[in-house]
Amino acid sequence: MQNSIYVGLSSQITLERRLDAIANNVANMSTPGFRGEGTKFDTLVSMKASDDVHFASAGKSYIRTEPGPIIQTDNPLDVAVKGDAWLSLATPQGQVYTRDGRMRMTPEGELVSVMGHPVLDAGGQPIVINPNGGAPKISSDGAIYQNGAQVGGVGLFSIASDAKLIYAGNSAVIPDVPAQPVVDDMSVGVVQGAIEGSNVDGVMEMTRLISVSRAFEQVDALLRQQENTLTEAVKTLGSKA
Image (cartoon, rainbow, N blue to C red; front, side):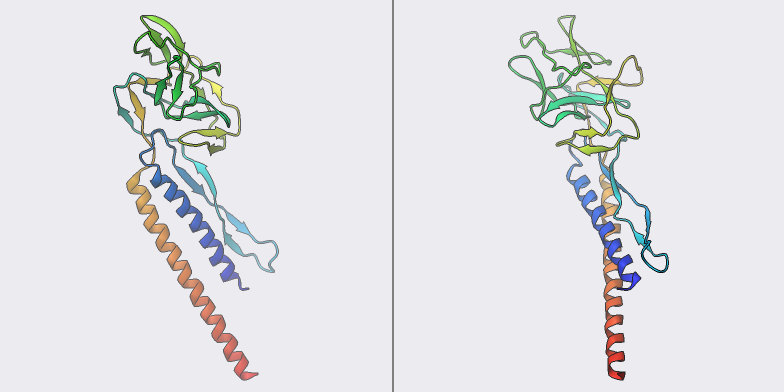
């Protein structure tokens, strides 16, 4: 098979992966705390061919971590995270991290996520407050108060900038290195009565979708042209044999 066909097919694999990532982003444009997916590309060099042949990489997916917009809700159990930090949840997958700060209180006073997973404090323990103590007050550092007394605290965790993240359901992620509790860092905190929106830019994603779709069609046309050229060459050589 000629090198141009290898290049074309590898390009289509790359573009298909980009389409999948864009589709996932668009589907989660309205998901609170969602982090959009991006794709990184490198050049792969074939070591088997007689001449160096450059192929289009299938790309490496990664989760973008830039913040989304802060949306006011006035719900006392909603919190939006400020700065480079994450909330943590206890799930069947283990401890996961999220920017979706929508909480609710169980009849027993435990604070859980919208998916029913316990929200954790800085020590990795579930947060339990007085279910009859009224609406809690949550300070900017995550401390929770009822009737003027501190009854708990929302844990904030930092994830290394070079950590690889994978999705863990809803808006949560799991890093490949342990997250660390945030201590005495004034650059991070929470805003009570608000949530963070998705960091997906709908207009930008639709523009990318159109661009990638057109590129896929162009590569497909080139492959068809290459196939027709080879077919005609075989016919010509066969007629002269």
